Picture 1: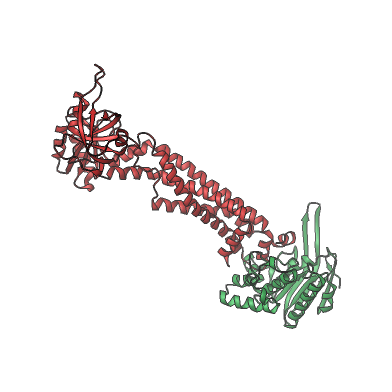
Picture 2: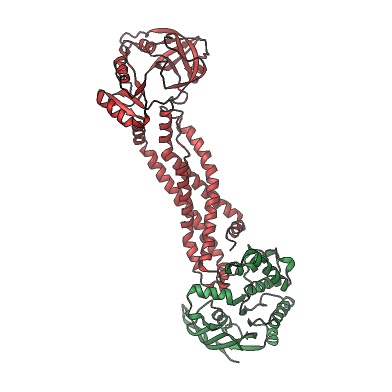
Length: 223
Length: 397
């Protein structure tokens, strides 16, 4: 089984005015190809911090993260950025779509950065929007979409460059129950199609669908 | 990246703010354009005006420039003949400038009167009627302001009265002259009432002290390429007069207008500073507001340099659009200011203070664009250095 993500002994300390805060304390995690891992825990348990380290959005104070054998800590910024572009898909709680771009353009964005020619990336964007059920909304801007639609566009964007792993931070956190269920159904389909998923969530429904559940408390994995 | 389209849409997100910023850049660009046109334009315009009739040299009383004082050259007949003996000299046109009184019916006007040689003159162009001809001692040509003040038309008779003699408080000589034609005097100030009469007539009316005298001699040389040599030769041959080429006169003019160039340099620099402040401020605000979007771009794998380029393109777009507006505004204000400045007494109305020359304008445009890019650099650097995780946590688009 291919190890897609290998995090070892991660520690993250933040310097604050009142002193230093340790958000993660020696966290290790391996994710194999095709796994659907749910990371759960109460607020402040360090799960979002862990996700930023796993995605190379921040660097650990100690420990290492490797994606498909490439250690993120040793990469210069340019190479780390490229790795995020090619290997990692991100889905955020607040969607973080670019408001001036249409749904299709938002999905095209990572492909444009990869240098994919416009006709090809447009076709791929349309294919992905159809996959998430938004073929008819391709020309709409985020402000013209509902929360669930925006999250589906964000998922399509995360899949644009066929990443090795998709990292989602509270993907249903901003959505009502029904819309959240639609997003979870979409994740289920992604998992069934072979996508490797790591989802940070409060949503207990995710734990019932994930192939593995990792529980965190006070910056440690407890289960 | 869909950089330009993206930048346009970003500007449209806050239309009022963007419009005000564009207006500010346009005003600054207009100021820069006008200052560039002012800094070199008047010299070029002055040079072109002096060359317009093909006379490349001016000979005036020693120590003076043409029509700078009331001093005159003596023994003009001899001097003219001597100048014509130079192989390089093709034509010599003496001009006497003085003030006389003109009467037509009940109208009286003080007129600037040029005494000219009809066969070789370089101070006017005929607009209507006939030109003066050799041996015509009864003809007069009127400029439009003089004709308006006297209410005279072609064919009318004008009484020209020479200077009052201050010793005897007596009127000068009088002569009745027939208006042959209407002319445009090339070097006159706006609304200057001028007339042209044969040189001999002007000398006679001006009084005995003007006999065989002229204010300036305009000289045409055969080979424009040898002007420096001809000028030097004439200076040596005639050390008692001032021999100036048009380049010399333009240089003198430039010295007198040094303050104009300094003013234009200062105001041009101020316009660039204003552009930097406007573009820089707007981009700083934009980057602050968009920190979440920028962090998203970085998170999904957009390179730092592309994020920076996006900010720079927005600055460049502001500058280009503002510059285009500034071009229209600048040309409009230049025309308006030109009308004001050329109405100053003593300046030829035909001169332009603001001349649009391709090379300086291209340099000004390039400077403006570079300024726009430089103004965006701090914000671009800040955008490219956005801490991804922190910005994503604290901001949402």
